[in-house]
Amino acid sequence: QALLNLLQSPSDINTLEADKNVGLAMQTYDALVLHKVKALTKIYSVISLSEVASKVGLGIPAIQTPNNTSNNTIVEEGKDPVEVVERAIVALALKGEISVKIDQVAGVVHFTSATSTSSSSDATLRRQVEQALQETNVLSDRLRSMQTQALTCAAYLHRTSTASPSSPLSSSSSLLMASKAMQLGGH
Image (cartoon, rainbow, N blue to C red; front, side, top):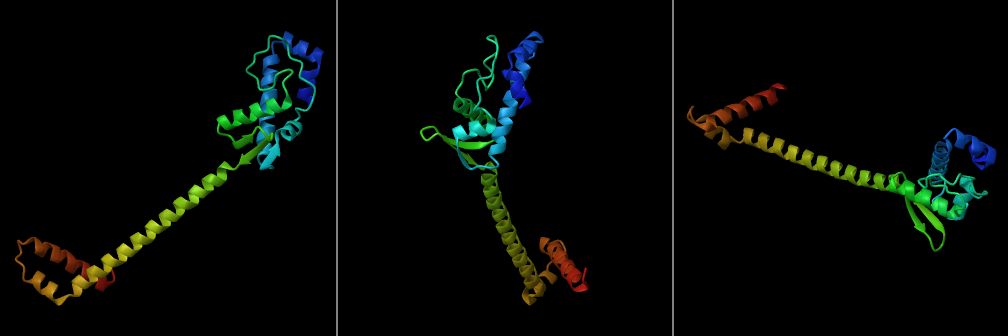
């Protein structure tokens, strides 16, 4: 409120102008407006633009700005408070700080939760990861079962024990037998 009072006082504006700080004061006020609009997104999901203007503090007489002030500010002298609020909302949305839909015909703003969309995609991703882990566990169990069957199959054991030492089968059978020995030995 003190900043607003400062910007509405002609003598304070003259002091700011003499110190070449009017632009800084206006940027500060713009930042305050943006902050207040962003805070409202945490409270309301649907609200009229005129009510946003009122809650932000724009339902007040125009701020006295000198004629040479840059038009890069959100708040401009003589602008309709609803237009100012709409510009602030659009600026925040373009920066990705809020997610919003504006119904200009009804004069209503719908704040949508970007985090709910994010949470939804996070939940979907989490389910996909859990499903992939379950499938991996099923495959691991199947491989373990196949290995156990191979190591206990008499025909396989006979075939691998009679293979020649230079045969590739003998080295793999040695590995399988070592694996079985480790399983039986509890290692």
